[in-house]
Image 1 (tube, rainbow, N blue to C red):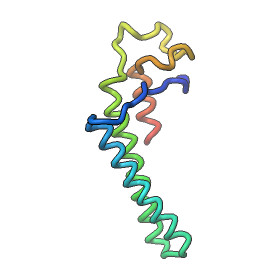
Image 2: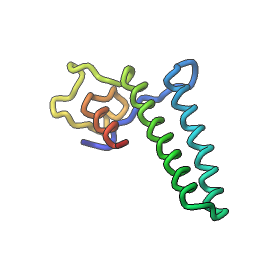
Image 3: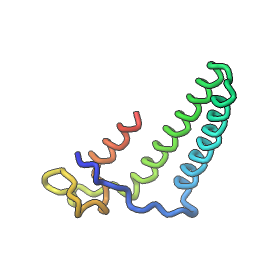
Length: 109
């Protein structure tokens, strides 16, 4: 599968899925800032690992939310799929196939 597939531009605004994604990313940003400060100050290893786990979880959830939100807008109808199942550069802005969404989802795990 080609790595040229992309989500159509996601517009900020009233969409609750986008709002949830942004909130999760901001939460991860705050947790990452705390993690960096903990490492720089020589905090206890358990505390650092706990904060690292929180950052990772927040980023994972943001990724899952993003894919979940984009699925309703990006999933192509079977009639729209190229016969080869591959993504050509000229198709980069088109809707994603189910296989492409699945591959993106699995990259998060």
